[in-house]
Each structure stands twice: as C-alpha cells, then as structure tokens.
Image (cartoon, rainbow, N blue to C red; front, side, top):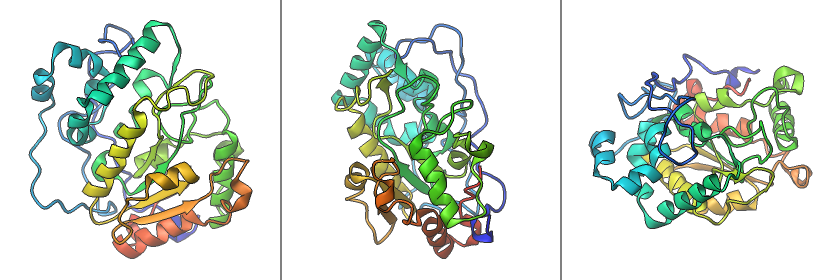
Length: 312
C-alpha cells in the first residue's frame, strides 16, 4: 500500500487483560465456562502520537467501576452484568449513566426474555461489546456506522461489517474491499478475498459500530426499535464530544447519514455515501474514495503518522 496508507509506529493496544467472572447466559448473572477479559486498571489504553488527542476542558474524575456497581440495585446489577464485565472501562465510564436509563433497562429485560425463551441471540454474549474493548474511547480516530448485526451463525462478532474465519466476507464487505482497491491499488483482500476479519482496523482506531448490537438468529432487524438505536446514538455523541479535536465519521447509506446529522462538521470530518450493499454500491460507493479521504484528513490534521493502515 502507498506511503500515506501505511501505519506508523506501534498499533494501538486493546489493554492488558484482566479476568472477570465468566459468562454463560446472555444477560443473566455469570456462572461458568467461557471467560471474557479486559483491562480494568485504567479507563483506556495509552495514547500514541498517531492518535488524535482529545482536549477536555477539565481533568475527568477517575471512574470507579466497583463503586458504581455497588450503587446499583440487585436487579440492575443482574440486568447490567454483561456491561459491567465486558465493556471497556473507558466506555463504561462515559456511558454508565445511560445504562441505568429506563429505556436501556427495558431493552435488557427484553433481551433476557429472548434468552429465557431459548431464542438464539447474535453475536455471542462475549462479543456484544467487542467494539469497545478493541477500540477504547481515547483511541478512536474513525467511526464506521453499520446497521444490523449479521444474523446467520458464525458471522457477527461485535464489529460492523466484520466476520471471523472461516466465514467468507459477505457481499457488502466484498464491495468495501473493491472500494479500498480503487483508492489504493496495492490493497489485496485478506486470504485472497476469502477472509473478512476487520479486527486489525478496530485495533488501529476504527470504531466499527452497528446501530443495533444484537439480533435474533436468522431474523434480520428483529431487535430493531427495542432501544439499541438510542444507545448507539449516545455512543456517537460521546465520541463526537470527547474526541474534541476531530475524527472522521463514515456514514454509508441513508440510516447512517441520519445518525450523523448533528455532528459538528467544523470539528469533525463527515463523509457520506450510499451503502456498500450490492443493491446500492454501484450508485456511488465505489467512487466515494472514503478510505483515501479519511487518511488525507487525518494526515492534514494530525500528521502522516496518524493515518490508518487499511491492510489486513
């Protein structure tokens, strides 16, 4: 890939691992089996020179997760078990007040009812907040807005547009690769075009955020209108506020475009295009040059070391 697309210096760390109690049920108290780990020793991973710094007006008060958790009612602690134990501390500090809003607790009760009625919920519980652990709040440089998680098995893993091996890239992701290859002819799709894991982008500061964070298996949009949209709208506003020197928002499709309407374009770079879906990509997505424009904006504002390495 060309020089402007190469990532300089060390990749952003997702934080040192610290084991939390294991999770088995989706939104019920943990009991056994698979463990989810993340750092709770600090509110975020350390910044590097390539990360656009934020400029808060005052020094934020350190967030005490244990103290906050202890302040919850027993019912709230049960409902918010997943958030307490798997959301990255930087995001939990910024969003903890939102989690106790009536609408969010109602959302969690709905998801609990889905689980207790033996509905298969995707992505797996440990991955619902993977975006937060892979891209801590102070590491965000770019936001890519997705819609519903993939609803078939072995696809969704908490990052918009991304799938884990051995699942091949879905059509929208293949079109994203095509757009990248137009911007950077040297780009080669991973695995010869047979891989779709975008974890490396997330680790480099690209927040891959879906509008809804869960879905019932094989039932697209089944968790739409339950509260996730309001929550992820809050995530977007938190990013825009706390990454106060400016980042890049990539909004593909009308739903994503509506979600960035309030973003201050004097501070942030907002790039809009049609969705990469095969139904719309030919109407302007391939020519949008968003990957190159993103790096040009980051380079202009923070220097060449700040650009995203889009190689996978």
